[in-house]
Each structure stands twice: as structure tokens, then as C-alpha cells.
Image: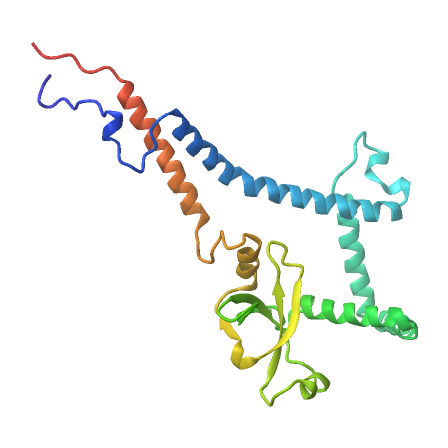
Length: 256
């Protein structure tokens, strides 16, 4: 063999971070495909579920003559969602003028005279106005509180200060603030309570990152780059494939 010839790489000479063996490469390839395809599949599933759910709600209100399946041999997913978007936009347009505001005020006065419905409607209206108006600051700031016991900290979403009636009933003279503590892995459930401002530590984190952290039970930390992890796994798989192909190549013939 010439001095310039490079000997084949043996499996024992591979770096420790490169997987060796069929099962190790299979596991790396499988995890790489799972990381790539998993979020895409779940996103498409949730989107499809939402579209079909809206279609099921809107379709009974659409006359049969105007349904796409009446003229097509198959149903058209998303047609109900389009009808809902157009109807809500038209409702907003009609409500913005004088006649629409008058009708809305009349409906609110009628609901305000119903004992049980009145409380439900007012509460839901305030929630929707706060979430979708884009002017409120509720649940857009993230903090930490010492819960459920000293030395244990939980993530909370910061809401508004309590009303005058509640603040005067709270013990002590310190200012309180209302927070919502989401439960993992379902952040839509949790605990709502008032906490003194001195016991609340505000964190420089978006509400979306906090929800991701809670839903993943701490597996996905804020600031982590999933694409880098995918690239690292793909690089390991490619290195293993190249190393294995090099090891299987026949050794060069010795020079006479």
C-alpha cells in the first residue's frame, strides 16, 4: 500500500458521538423523522379538526341549494369556515353603524333582565373584549410565584389588579394583583388567585413561550432551537451512513 493511500475507517475509530451498528442508526433515523413529521402531523390534525368542527356548526344554517356538496360529488372542507368568517365580518360591519348599535343595545338590555343569563353574558363579553380588542394587557405578562409550598416556584400569567371592593377586603396594606396559574399539560385549566406584588417575580417571557413550557412539562425550554436539534440528529445520521459506506469499501491493492 502506498504511503498516500488512506486506510479504511474501522468502526472502532469513529467518534463517540457517531452511532455505530444497525440499531443505533435505525434509532437515529427514526427519531429524526419523528421530530420532523410529528409537529407537522399534529398541526394538520388540529387544523383539520377545527375546520370540520366549524363546518359541522355552520352547515345546518346553510340552505341545501347553497351547499357545495349539492353540486359536487364530494364535500368541500372549509366551506362552513368561509361562511362563518363572512357572516362574522358582515355582523361587525352592521354593528358599526347606528342601526346595528341600536339593535345590539336592545339585545343587551333584554339579556340584562334575565337573572342567570345576565351574569354569564357580561362575564363572557368582558373576556372576549379583553382578549380580542388588543388593548388589554391581561395574560400577556408572565411571572413566578412561590406555589404550592415554600421553595417551589410556578409560572403564572399576570392579569389585572383587583377591583376596589376586593382590594379593600384583602388583608394587609400591600398592593395585590390577580394571576392565573395554568396546570400542566393542559394550560386551559388552573388556579386563579390574588398575590401581593412583592411575592411576584415578573419574567421576561412571552405568554406563548410560557404555554409551550407548561404543555411540554418543561421538556421544551424557552430559547431552545428545535431546528438545531433536528440538524444535529440529521448530521449524526449522515455521518454514520458515510462512515459505514467507507468501512464497507474494499481496501486498495498494494503496489508492487
